[in-house]
Length: 144
Image 1 (tube, helix red, strand yellow):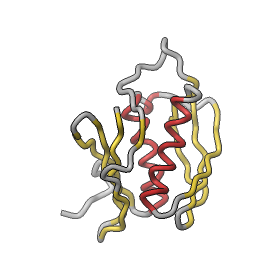
Image 2 (spheres, rainbow, N blue to C red):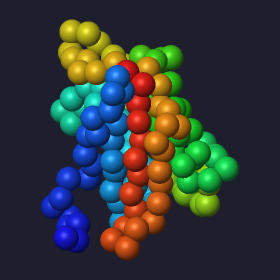
Image 3 (cartoon, rainbow, N blue to C red):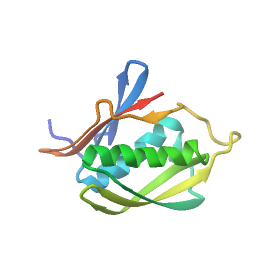
Image 4 (tube, rainbow, N blue to C red):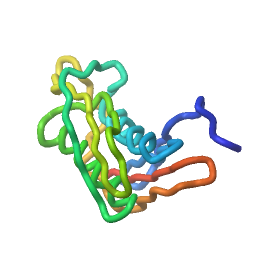
């Protein structure tokens, strides 16, 4: 059955000792933006948080799957290395295997933000980013 705009933008994948997402987008820009949002929706309830600052992120890869892993690892670093929660993603430029984005962030405050899941790493295990007849799709597994 064809996907519609009302369908979920991603779904959670159960994986032994890990967690994952399958993300959908009409084009690579939408796919990468939704993947970034989905990553942080696994970490916290980011839908109710308003961005306080913006950060510019630039990443590249050797192919689409490598770019996806590098992108999500860079976003995850904002959390693990700087205690920033990503609450908004805007892809500024995406050319084959290179991406520039502006991400809205907020400094983590344990009094205001509940952590739902601790994601340790974005893995290459089972990574897939591909153009399908109905749009773009990515599968990403996280080490938790």
